Image (tube, rainbow, N blue to C red; front, side):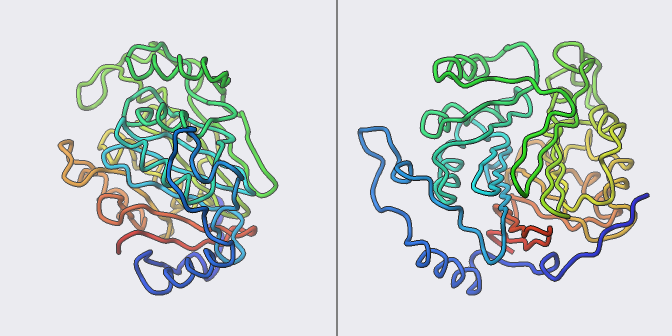
Length: 332
């Protein structure tokens, strides 16, 4: 087992966006950068920030910002590193405006990479609205057959906009000077409709275990995200040898469903030492009961600090070049 790295002061400094410290910091950043261009979305189809790619509002010595957006019972996460932007999932069909607002905040007029972990609408539903205003250099998504209207329309839109759609294999890497993102799953044999076994809830294959699993690193900071992947996906991730105790942030899979976040993976990430952060994207009062008490208990037993978008709002991390980071939430 790898030794858990020491956390610097940034890793234990919690902030609330509505508090005075964040408000003053945000104001100083805004004034220093000259602020965003005032205006409204016009007939030309260009958003105000699209004239020039602005620098992301990074605090202090941060080189990377990671934000788990509050998109209800859906998922979307933005990574901004060295002026490059990666969007992982886009929420549901009603999430487009939330995602676009986040892109505006960080001054993003073009995505360097859009990762769609799998074909469910609560992960890809906002993609069409986003791409209509903020195009992407490329799209990564698993190799599955299009079987829904939302999925088919997305593929057609990518073709119209001449955006390459790539089915990355494990080991595929995207990177910048300070950041590195690597695909860890799924293995080829788990792609597409070969995944047919019922899960613990009795549901047949529904794309969950075709979810792309990725690890992002910036200095000593590491984050693991694997969409709606469940226990079969977690077995694949563990086989890579890259789900280890140096991971700081776990994006909890499938909104906290009991079919994911197995004990083996949680223990591999925590390394038996408390302090790692688990972020759950779930809608307030959702009909699925996510996150389940079973998963919350597993996370607590493994020593994770739990942050939830249904309780804390959006969760963001400001990461410096060495990997020290601050955590900020909309609500305590």
